[in-house]
Amino acid sequence: MFDQLTPEKWAELQSDATRSAVRQRIKASAGDVESLLGTTADAAALVLYEMAKMAAAISAAGTVAEIKAAAQPFADLTAPFLAGVADGSVKLPVLAKGEAAALAEMQTRATAVAVALSLESND
Image (tube, rainbow, N blue to C red; front, side, top):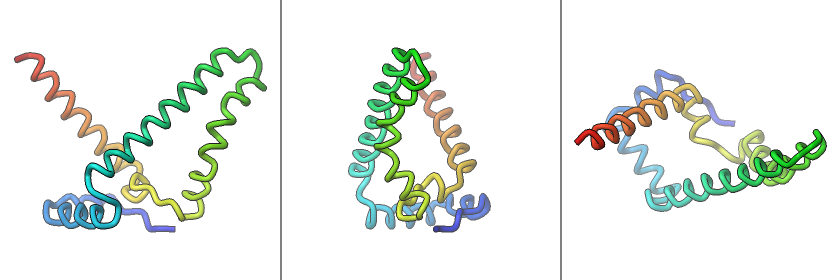
């Protein structure tokens, strides 16, 4: 498996020059911004679709067996993904960054967007 970045190493990666180099490596190996956005949109839509189906089935369930049956299709769909993460053949940026660092980045970025949106609504 890959080594997790330490918080110190992740902070170092935040410099503009390093960030630019990392983005160029990502673009060369994983695709341009539009391709990455497309894949992200596909992943978000798939999760929303599958979770909505599961929520609908769970809300109609009357027994624990029916709840388990409602969750099974999503479990089956994601089993190869989870196995790939476990065996290291699938690597996730959130795990490479570290979950705490990724969560902190999400919180900071989400707050900045919300502030920008609230400023626009006050104009």
